[in-house]
Image 1 (cartoon, one colour):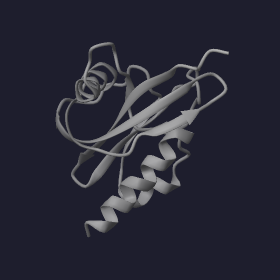
Image 2 (tube, helix red, strand yellow):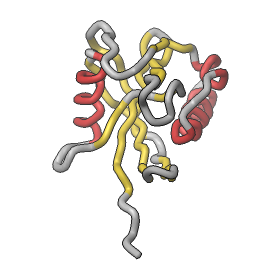
Image 3 (tube, helix red, strand yellow):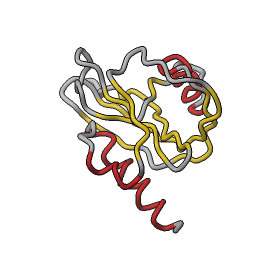
Image 4 (cartoon, helix red, strand yellow):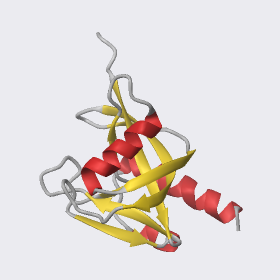
Amino acid sequence: MAKEKVIKVVCALVEHSGNLLITQRGELMHEALLWEFPGGKVEPGETETGCVARELQEELNITVQPYQRLSPVLHHSPIRSIELIPYICHYTDGVIKLHEHRAYRWATPDELPHYNWCPADVPIVQEYLQLRNACR
């Protein structure tokens, strides 16, 4: 039996004015209507940080500067396996325009546990909150 290919995906925890950007998946997407950190698949030859910047420009029309990599999450679902690689980013420019997502929010860190997250994003929320609390 062939080994299943793991898809490398990056996501962005975009910080701005003490809040974090989160997006809600569209009705026709896999894991419809769940919340996630925006991002996408790493293209061949592309760096992780380059992918973060490209995906947020394409999907949300904003410019970000990744500055800290968090722990990757290996997630298996019935349709695929992904390695989700999170980056904390500074928001630098742009007005959000949704192209794929249903909605977005600038959530406070305290609000994050109250959203219905995609399963792969749950450990990232937890790590981010632990990191944030350690820095207080």
